Length: 235
Image (cartoon, rainbow, N blue to C red; front, side, top):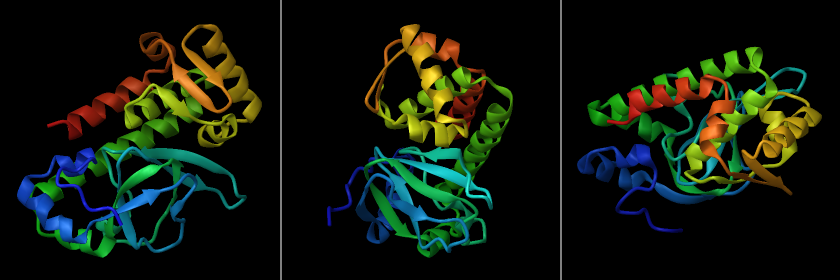
């Protein structure tokens, strides 16, 4: 198993004072996060929390009929499994790896104990919870009110920010599932963005060609989400 890095890759961990991070190190494990790995399912107990490196984890709400919609994403600025820290270790959503890479994991019960000691860790995780709540709330409004081209642009920008790259590996089927729209709608929206010179899409690979214009094509939700994360987490 790869060693825990002295300098954390995950930006949330990197924000901690050295002493607080070193207190977590004995409990952290460097693990691969392969594509489509389910970290936990709705209704299951949360055994581990994960701090992604360059992986992306989709937080997915599921209806009783089996329909899925992405309500949030966790990247290298965050951590999965927040319900456990707030007093309940039963997952209300499913956490699915949508971009493979690696990350740090630790027992949820141990992080909860560290959280209870206060300090910067507690403050940081509370602010992250608020940022994640802002993201899920804005996603709900966006999915209900905005056009598919705007939603797709917003989602691509958020994913790009999370992986810190303009090169993305995303299938149309997956994008349709995450945006809770039909696949033909995503195909048409991606085609319009490509014709406008904003992206290039070919065989599951998307390149953002003009970020400034893609931001202009996005709905206002992208700017709102970005400003909330900056206000709460960039200190």
